[in-house]
Image 1 (cartoon, one colour):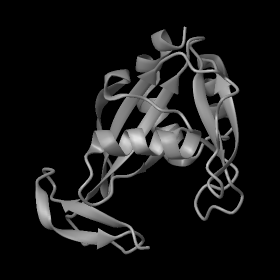
Image 2 (spheres, rainbow, N blue to C red; image 1 turned 90 degrees about the vertical axis):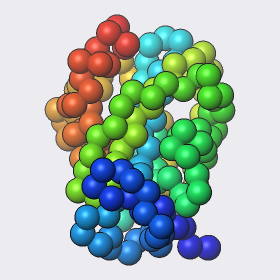
Image 3 (spheres, rainbow, N blue to C red; image 1 turned 120 degrees about the vertical axis):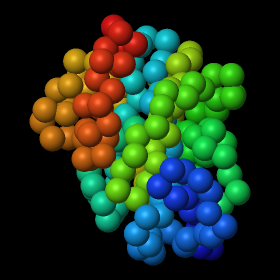
Image 4 (cartoon, rainbow, N blue to C red; image 1 turned 30 degrees about the vertical axis):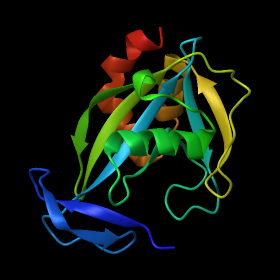
Length: 169
């Protein structure tokens, strides 16, 4: 079944059009992506390893992320992606909006989930991810310096480095 995205203009005003995932967006149109950073009770961040079968960034580490589908709010998409990709269920009260980053064709809404999570309770999404790790801030820095993070994740980590430092201390 095709996945449809709502489209937005440069100022994030919703347009009365949708786009099928995978098609090139018209210049000046954007879709919304969510990026969820999950921190457990040990102040470790959840990272998942992308499948070797993925077209983009195979065998590289990432946090939970995905596109907001037609008719869905950014918050609902963040909670859905977290559940789909990791098996972690969070309530609206357990997720915090951090901010938005704008990319060439998308607005990336960044969220934080900080809660008690059994480190061994992760359920990976078949075909998407093949492994997971709970990492400290210094381990994440090391993964980044070794080129082990998918490019968009590395880029966002660089932008959010000072935000994460006290969270993962």
